[in-house]
Image (tube, rainbow, N blue to C red; front, side, top):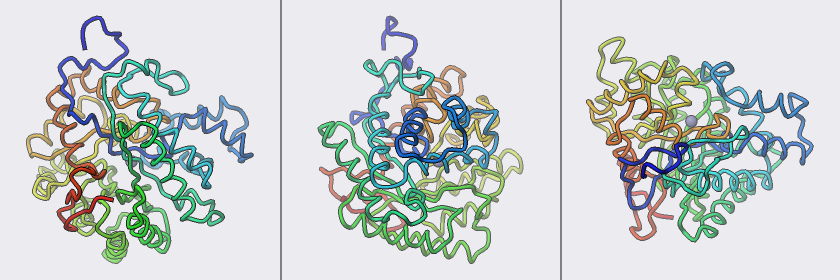
Length: 393
Ligand SMILES: [Zn+2]
């Protein structure tokens, strides 16, 4: 980037990107469709909404500090987005919007009031791959829609985008199990994940999401059940877990959970830093390093849920991870509902001296290296140390 470039783009002058572009690993479909598109879809399909005007809807769904503040509050309105995205037709459209959005938004640091990128054509941050996650069980309207058809629709959108972009945009879907779902539903999701990935659909990973307080997995029986479900998903998918974002998860439970679920990556593992800062316990940091588990960090989301209190603490967090050789990547989590882009979140780190260009570059390399999206030319990636080789689809 040169000095004459517009200020609304990521100041990437000191950044070098991997040849293959940047991979974004942690984006939820429920948070990746712009609010006005969700509203239009709800009106189109006659879906009942908790409010009556667009202004109220927009205010309700936009994730800000004043209506977030905790993970539970942050997650509150996802149910609305999930309801609108339910059924094969709506889901296909949502996945298309999310993937197109990532490809189009790319390096823009400015978004419109509606959450659309303002400078879509001169991107500086080349997002070339998106791992999009969703819980299909929360998109089938309580069983009205057939789960296989729902997922097939999402997968067909991924294939369509890959074809439309002539291979320049890679994508894959991560299936989220829910801490808030009954275990029999989680088991169905895991079994289906194994089936879908075996059938060659672009299902690349398994995740555990939802409010941590809904099922902390502290009870060994609950953890065993979840581990069995994760095992059912089979060896073709990578494994990530939302774990340790809130104080509901103790450091011991964190380590036991990641071990039992054989995690390759972990979403928002803030418990390891808290335990070090507050109790002088480095064992969580050492654990992540020793097992080479990659931390998926989402800057604005972590600030909104108060998982990280402020941007200065974010800087300390990154330094601490570097000190203990904990690898990390950056993603947006819910770009449309936060009205952010990956570029704007990285810019926030740079502007506040919370990250150096070198740290960001290292994160891009880590994201490429730990991506669940198979590289067709290389065939088997073998990313999962726990499950043996993860075959290309
Ligand atoms: Zn997340």
